[in-house]
Length: 267
Image (cartoon, rainbow, N blue to C red; front, side, top):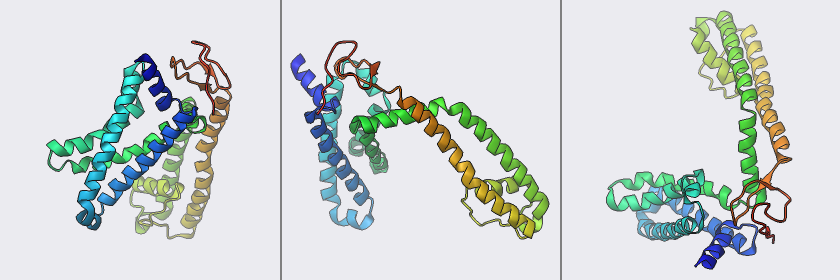
C-alpha cells in the first residue's frame, strides 16, 4: 500500500519525472476543456441547443477532478498542508458548484467559480520555470512591500497636489467644482485611463494635463522596477522541494535531498 501511495505521489507531485509530466499535460488539457464547457454554457443560444450535452461533459470533468483531488489528499503526508493551501482551496471550490446544483436550485450561479480551475495551471505546471517563478514573484512582492508603500504614499501626495492645482487653474466652469473631484481627475489622468468625463479647457490646464500624462508613464514603471530588482535578488536564492519528505530547504541545483537523501529525478 505504501508503495502504491509513493507511486501515486510521484506521478501527481513529481513533475520532474516523465510520468509526472505526462500527468500534468493530461490534467492541463482537461482543465482547459472544462473551462471551455463553462464558457460555452454561459452563451444562451449554445445552452439552449447543447445544454444537456454540456451538462454531461461537466459531470465527467467534475468526477475526474474529484478523483484527482481525492488522490492528492490520499498520497500527501500532511493533508492539511494541501487542503488549506491556496491551490487546495481553489481545487475544492472548483468541485462544489456541480454538486450544489443537485441540492440547490439556481446553483448555476456558482459555475463562475469553476473558472478558477485555470489558476491551477500555475500549480500543475510547477515544472520549475513556472511554479518557481510564481513563488519567486510572491516573495519578491513581499520583500518590496515597504518600498511600494513609500512609493504609493508619494503618488497619493502627488495627486492631491495636482488635483488642488487643477481646481485653482480650471475652476467650476470646466467641471473641477471641488478638490476631491479634481483629485479624481488627477488619478484618472496619471494612470493614463482618461475617461473624458472631465477635461481641462484652459491652455495652462491642458499643459498640466499633458505633463501629468507623461509623468504617468514614468510612474507606472517604478513599481515594476522595484519588484524586478527583488526578483533578481530572490532568484539567486531559489530552493527546490523534495517530493518524498516535503523538505523545502533544498538548494535549487541540488541532486539529492539534504534531509532524506532521496534523489531528485530529472527527465
